[in-house]
Length: 274
Image 1 (cartoon, one colour):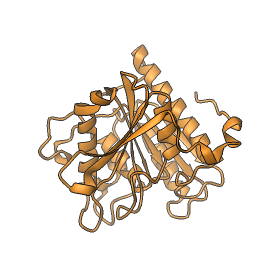
Image 2 (cartoon, helix red, strand yellow; image 1 turned 90 degrees about the vertical axis):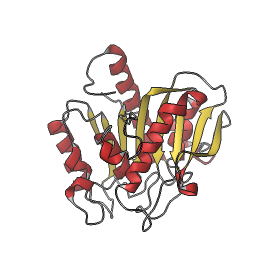
Image 3 (cartoon, one colour; image 1 turned 45 degrees about the vertical axis):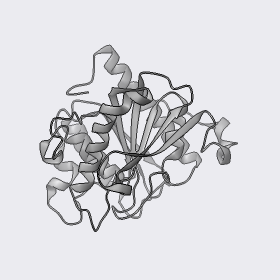
Image 4 (cartoon, rainbow, N blue to C red; image 1 turned 30 degrees about the vertical axis):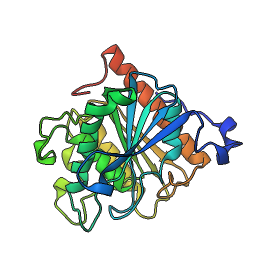
């Protein structure tokens, strides 16, 4: 299980912890052919440890706005400070792009990590994907459709499976009135990777009942761990600002990832592709 930790030491220093001096950001690396909408930043410890696990994060913004350096920064900096390689990326936006264009972009990011991650000290076999709001919707879709050629045009043979998924204040339904196949719920299988779902109980945009329903659907079908964290008093976009609440979420992500990696090392408890 995941034990809850109270980050009292960090509470006193919230204003100064968003960016760490031991982490460097390598900005605006191209992963596709869509110009500014296909750029990613790499966060890594300045010591450049080798064999680092990877966390990919995609921003939210209703699929029509948002920036790669605007959300979940405490998560990216904390993990990078502990030796992870973290990736935050732009992707094509509405109205010029529609589903599944955004999902294809995320698959390209995963493929980029597999091919180039070693240049930044990453272990390309250990890739977690995370997202906020619309980015969470996309992360869940990517996690639940590994290596599906329908979402990998031109790079069908790339390995886009992931080790685990982190779904933050997400959207769980269909994409702007499209069919049910555009919802993560339509792609849940027994081999779904481990999931952490975090949602605020006061979210005015996505009712918490939808998060509960998604987590329950995963638990009924998936053979892998599903962690559901409901934030009392939590609103939508709780990761937009550095706060005590989001520090607790980062603690949960850290513990979740450690548990998944430990199970993989022991060769027990994780089913399907890594």
